[in-house]
Length: 95
Image (cartoon, rainbow, N blue to C red):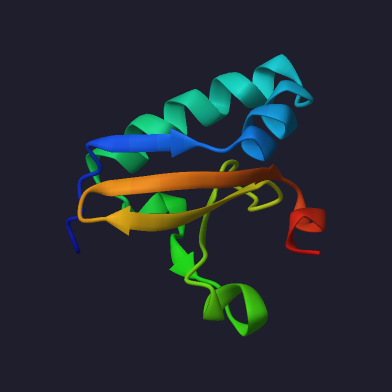
């Protein structure tokens, strides 16, 4: 398994706004999943991957918040061990 621990996460205003609109149970799930992300950004259950197309060309990656993959976190790696969360939500965040 590929290991890539994250020591620092920056949160964009858009991410914070989107997070506040999610149901509390989903916010709790996201907090648990973020712990996995911090331990290893490529933890298999997160399904972390670089996006394709225009977003991928900007270096944007995503990971699953829920097991069904309905909700995702969009992020970029800013430096080794550092990431910036850009947005969170269902598949509409790709638009």
